[in-house]
Image 1 (cartoon, rainbow, N blue to C red):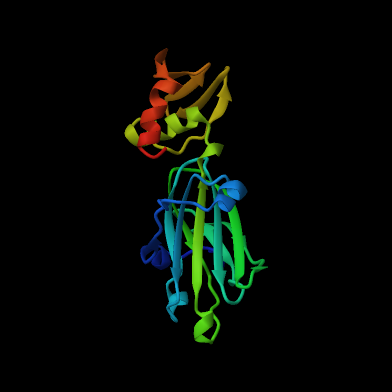
Image 2: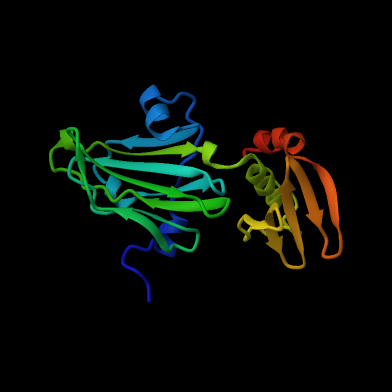
Length: 214
């Protein structure tokens, strides 16, 4: 049975793409959220509430802070996974002087997440302004996890991206069907189901992972 907070397929299909490529981030948000990247959307369209669902591309294990602002307290700011299932929501309200809802979540996978800003605009023209802001903190992603995340995209046939990092016999490892990726003492290993092979170092792969957005 669908949860009332879930985001529908129709809403996901019509979602506005919100790129996390804001060139400058105010120092307050860098300090408050450890923001490395950010994205925002601001409008005063009187019918903005009819299209207030956004999609962001997230990095596995990165932390995201999402703020939604409208004249009246947004109904229920919520974030869903790529199936539309609600993972976090806020029905609070910070008043300054517009109302702000705020949620934080750690991405369980690299891929799309959906935001329902759930604005509540006032009647007066001066009260129509609404916004949504997203702040991405990549510091919560371990260096070896950045490499694993990159490998799951670069070699998706081998590493489908549905594994989580766990401790296995002294390795930080992600287990796949019949094989695994592992990290130990700054070195990256591949297990093919029979033997463990050293394939490089975390530092050696990290620059490429960062260049590709991980």
